[in-house]
Length: 226
Image 1: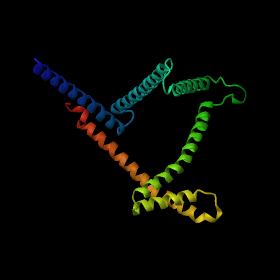
Image 2: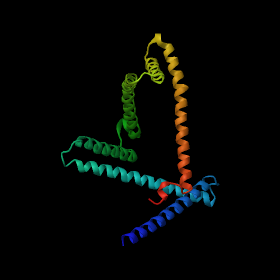
Image 3: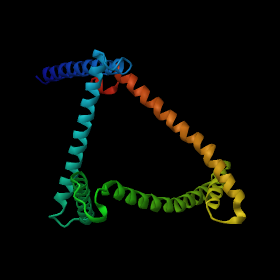
Image 4: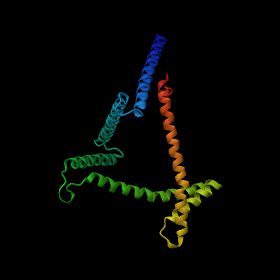
């Protein structure tokens, strides 16, 4: 009896995986062909509809995720639990953002704020403040990381890292006698750092293309029988 149940379950899994793979392959190839086809063609219009549906589903997923987050934090408030204060901050922040967005859409601001969009301005102020605070913490993280590296083992790579950290940090200091360090810092930021960033972006792009090809060919692990 158990063997028969396992056999039926495996058959259902195979059928379900085959249906999922066929559906994804059809949608994927249709969208890909539609993107390189004229916009007024049948395939182009179909691909545009698929992309709009994907955008709607993504928006619904974000809404469900935010709602779930708020419900989880609301459940923590009636009970005195560790971290309840942070849950209250999250809820109040979400309510404030929603209120500001609604007021921006209804043009309810008056006085000096009449006709202004407070949401983007408020977001910019908070974003700049947080980025400034994180940038200030980077200094301590870099120094501590260099200390840990040199304490663990002294190698040429660690020495290069320590020298780069010192040059960049000294180069940012507003000292007139250290203009040469500023030039070296600019060279490090424009050449090695830019090269590393481009390498990371190329790797991300290749990984994305590889995953997309595996999905289109039905080779993704989700299509296989567990």
